[in-house]
Amino acid sequence: MKEEFKAFVIDRDESTKEQSQGWKTVSTDDLMDGDVTVRVRHTTMNYKDALAITGKSPVVRRFPMVPGIDLAGEVVASESDRFQPGQNIILNGWGVGETHWGGYAEYARLKSDWLLHQPEGLSGADCMAVGTAGYTAALCVLRLQDLGVKPEDGKVLVTGASGGVGSFAISFLAQLGYTVAASTGRMEEEPYLKTLGASEIVDRGTLSGKGRPLDKETFAAAVDSVGSQTLANVLSKIAYGGTVAACGLAQGVDLPSTVMPFILRGVTLAGVDSVMAPLETREPAWSMISKTLDRDALAQITQSAALEDIEDLASQLLEGKIRGRLLIDVD
Ligand code: NDP
Image (cartoon, rainbow, N blue to C red):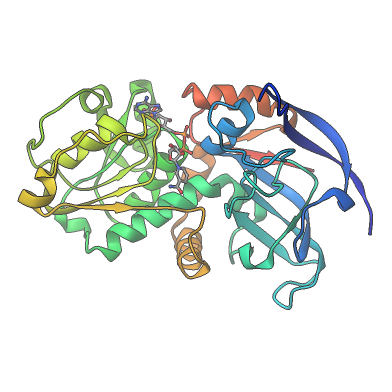
């Protein structure tokens, strides 16, 4: 089978190191190696996709590259016993959109080891509205649960609350019975965050500047997608024996903290990675999503976006102007 199709391609001039990008017509023969070929139906835009498209961070490590770290679609050809033509699959991460052509195209060829069957009870569009951001939020929540954080322990803080990870973390935690405090720089989003399940709003300005190594024990646990000074301040406010699931760097990659929360309060800092997480970790996360997903919250969190607008959307997302998640219908 040979099909010509449109793909958004990022390229780089190796002498000047300047990045260029745009829509190109390519063919299924141009696709990279893999044992499953997929007709992409839906994709999304994550923070990492926005970094790749704008070139603000060296996310793309092989050129030319089709970005898009998440995709959902239908198998059209397969050499794998796990997948048959006509089945619906989802993919999150594994370096797709970074070193392997990704979701901003009508077709993708992928390794079967990276794919999950579309989870029961969710459509491809649902899965892409959730995307890596929501799946990472689920990994964070499961990590807190694995480390023994219970609803009766006290409030759980979610930073970067209006973003993709933050919005889903609030919704999942609230659905599971936790009391959620949401930290945001967009105080006007209070009604949105409360609809998702937050019972208290924290101005992110109170967390983003230099704070004390140990502060008042305020939260039993936290999901942090911000990093840097915010994460340092969050650690200092975690109650004895509490846990922070850290997955992001929206404020920065540094962590200007001390060992005090760890050695005096037994706080656990649990790192969460979605990209290379094995299938045994992904499957429970998607199963939790399909059981816990609140349809009203999903509708609040998700905005539909057009593939043609991805360059504008990438800039807006990095400027913190996108609330929640973007769902892109590739058809
Ligand atoms: P979004 O851009 O949707 O959300 C990030 C949110 O962080 C913003 O909405 C904003 O929330 C807050 N924020 C932005 N800039 C700052 C700042 N300078 N200081 C404090 N808060 C800030 O991104 P995602 O939710 O998709 O991703 C969040 C982070 O998680 C990113 O760093 C991303 O790379 C990382 N990530 C990591 C994954 C992993 O596998 N470890 C997977 C997915 C994401 P508000 O306006 O409410 O304050």
